Amino acid sequence: MVQRESSKSQLVRSGSPVRTCVGCRERALAVELLRVVARAAVDGYAVVPDPQRRLAGRGAWLHPDPGCLNRAIRRRAFGAALRVSGHLDISAVAQMLEAPRDSGVNTAGESYTSKR
Image: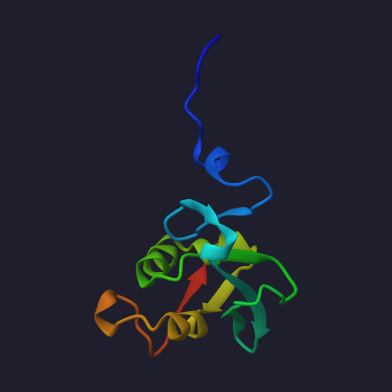
């Protein structure tokens, strides 16, 4: 019989939800990640944090780390994960994570246009 190494998902306790971070693409327990959802705004969508995991709609998951936020912005991952297109304002998420100003995130106007 062939012995296989157990994958990361098998190491997690059964019944614990595992999600993928849209920034770094690593799998982690849902309790370790921040859920974000898209809300309709005047000029597109606002990506807002959902720490209680109660807001309606499709969610995306992100490590509560400014580095993962920067990678998600650079990869334009929010639009694809949330299945929205157009202007995305992520200032609420950046403010919650309190990203340092020198990290590449412009906290005055975090937004980008999704090409989805």
